Each structure stands twice: as structure tokens, then as C-alpha cells.
Length: 376
Image 1 (cartoon, rainbow, N blue to C red):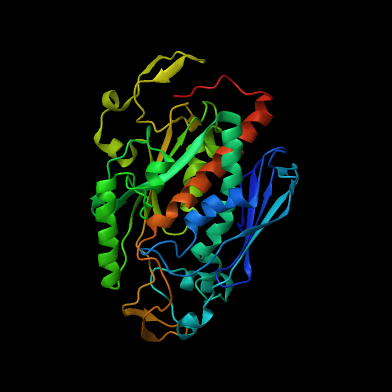
Image 2 (tube, rainbow, N blue to C red):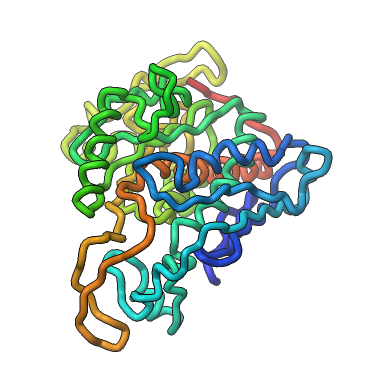
């Protein structure tokens, strides 16, 4: 009822708040025999954590996970996996002045209406701090997909403000996302290096102006075989949409041609079937369908985009009201991202991987075997 669990066969349950002792995730349904260590988890947790560069929040968290259950001698056992990530750098005092004020763009008012009370310290349960649990679970999901299909899920920044990158989802690599040609860290995680420089400059400009900026993240899943997804209510596209919309700050999701299909005719939008050299010997010439037909994976790369709003917490004054019905103004203190996109990449990857892992296990349970894989 409370909405803290996600998935069916591969099920994730999270608990924790931004300024509580820590965040915990329990993963049910993970098959045994998958290699898993703290070091494995740290790769994506380090990509998500605050304080990693000059263009993100300067809150300092080591985000070192503790595996509490479900792993023995370096491998999953098939039982429930429990992972804890402790909070270390909470500054709850930054929020004392606004405990009775509703921050524009945040869930303060709606949480108060829902529960009759709220944790005002950084947004409590609605804070993006909660995503540390999802990213940890996503590491396991990505390992499962890699082990069974050699599949991979990559997320990168496609757009920030009016700066739009040119990226080929078919060929982009993790090193393109994480590193510049010079070998330095790609702090904005945009594989179009010319656009990346402009994005960093724009983020620094809006921060100086005590403001924030939004953008678009693109996510591609390659190596996913045909056949994942359920007709009608549990279509793969529906579950992927829910997964991405469940992340904080996501205001729009599209896949394939997305909203541009509204301007196209069927004759130009259809992806024509052609013969492929491997089983099941069928693929499509193009991929405007974004890797899903009828809500079921087609074997072509799954391509999605998520629109991320500008950070709501601003240090400049804004109008608001109190929970007592008084007009006032608010100036949010604390450490906040001027742009959410650079840290979104591991979150987007995690949620897509969780959906794909869940549907793989559901399909395996339904068929008893895996059908011919179509990969391209």
C-alpha cells in the first residue's frame, strides 16, 4: 500500500530519508551465483554520490555500502539481499528556518496533506537521497543482464538548457560518458565533448545567478533480446515509464521517436522488417520504435529519454506560504545541485536495469526456457 516496493519477480524495497541514519534496500528474487562485492556496488554509487565535482552539490558522503544479507563467499545465495548505506554529512540545521514553509517545486505541501506531518529536513522520503538504494539494487540487476545476455544499460546527458548534444545510442560507450579525450573526468556525462564544455559553462552561469537549469537524459539498453514484456497493463514501455517517472524531478518520458511521431505519417514512421543473419533471423532497418513493439522488446536497442526539471531549491528569495496559512518568502539554505543531470545517469540506468531484470525473470518463469534471442 505504501509504494515502497517495485517489481514482481525481481522485487526491490527501500527505506530511509535524506537526514536519517541511512538508507536500506532489500532485493528479492535475485538468482544465486551472481558475483557481488562492496567494490562492485561502489562503481555506480560513486557516480551518483554528491560532492564529486564542482558542478554538483557539495554535500560529502562516502556512500560506502554494507551488504547485510544474501551474499556468501562473494556470490548471491538466492535469498533476500539487504544493503545499507549510512548518511554521514547531514546538516539538518539548514532546514530549521523553513520547517513551517512550503518550498516551491517540492513535495512539502503534498506530503503534509497526505500524512498530516512531514520530515522537513531535506524533503525526507521524497529527497533524491533515497535513490542511493535504487542505484545499489541496479548494480545487481545490471550484473544479471550482463551474465545472461551480455546486455548493457547506459545513460548520458543529451541536453542541458538550450545546449543539445549529438550522440549515437548504438555506439556510445561508458568511457565516452565518463571520460574526456584528455583523460579527465567528464563531469557533465555528455558524450558529445564540444556540447559537454558548453553545458558545464551554462551550469556555472546559472549557479552564479542563484538559479538552476533542467535538461534531458537519454538511456539506451543494448543486447536485450526480443520477447521481454507483457501485453496490456505490464507492457515493457509502461513499466519503464513508471520506473523513470518514479525518480525525483522527472517530468517527461519518451522512447524511440517519442513526441516527434506526432508530425510523421505511418509510411515514414514504420520500421520495415528485414532478414537478420542470426536467429530468429528478423530485425528492422530502423529503430523509430525504440526497441519495443506492442510493449514487448524487439531485439533492437531500447532507447528512452527523460526530461529533468531544474532543481527546485534556490538560494534566491521566492514567494510562498506557511502551513498556518500566512504569506511569506523563502530562501533555501544548504547544498543543492544547480543541475540534476550529471548525477542522474546511474539513477536512470538503475531503474531501466531493474525493469529489464524483472521482465527477464518473469519471461523465464512463463516459458521455462529462453526463446531465440534477437540482438542487433
